[in-house]
Length: 182
Length: 182
DNA sequence: ATTAACACGTGAATC
DNA sequence: TGATTCACGTGTTAA
Image 1 (cartoon, rainbow over the protein chains, first blue to last red):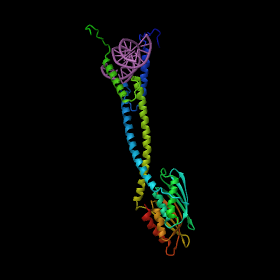
Image 2 (cartoon, rainbow over the protein chains, first blue to last red):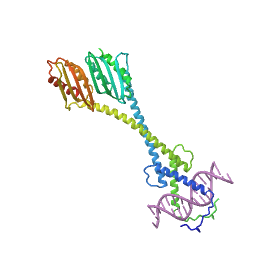
Image 3 (cartoon, protein in one colour):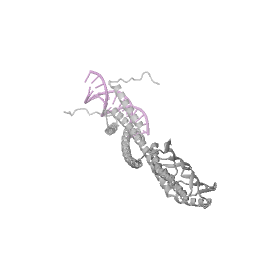
Image 4 (cartoon, rainbow over the protein chains, first blue to last red):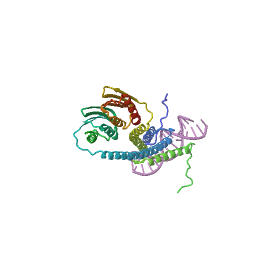
């Protein structure tokens, strides 16, 4: 119950409202800051600032560590890529060939390979070895031969980021030319 | 010039000093915070808090991005390590393996061979080579592998007068034990 | 002279 | 109760 006869304080300063809004503003920012900082110990103005300080230092440290770790990994990654690239270059020598090799990507890790070639003693083994050497894991094979012609359907899985179907095809053509077609 | 008769203010509150130290404390933290934050626009209390807020948000964002990037790289790295490790483990496990080799005569010249064994790098090639060495011509192969276990169904033709199914089986078991089970 | 920002002392509330 | 913390109104100062 508010009484009508209560004193209305008379304010001398003109900047009263300005000061009020200023304080409100500061407090708002302060509380916003508090909301942003986890692990608040005490909700005091001083401690809020203190925790914010520590938190910023923590974040700075984290950023620095993560950046260091990242460049480190980046270096390793580049090294690996480079080594694989050189491997790849070695195997890159490709000639034209009129064999029937079809490489079809199934999904991100799987290729379907169809090869029609002349059947040769030991050739199939070498084909398997070649696929293994490319880092491709054979998950399924179906081979039938008739009258000296072999029909190979092979499913392989592997890291295909660096091994595009067309490249696999060219490698296989070379392989087949060299070892299988005779 | 200070006069000796100037009024010394009389303070009513007892918490005057406490309040003074409190304000000093808050201001110290505030200035410390300001020193920690780069790109200060205006040196006002409100703006200091505001800039600190934005800065923390910025740092949080940076940390998150870096972490994501790192996790991504970490996954790739782990995958590679894991693949190589599994390869290594597979290559190391030589002894323990229960084989399942079934040799069934189809006709006078044809055998159907079923082999269930652990999948090994290059093992399949050796199996093919071994069959060739036995004078058996492979006319049909079907291989599927799942979780490191390979299921081979092979049809071979050859001169079987001297090569009974049971002998082929024993030879294959030995062969698989020696080269395939890994 | 107007304004924005600040420090101060004080009363009140909280623990 | 004392000790802390806060909000408030005010005076002051620099732009």
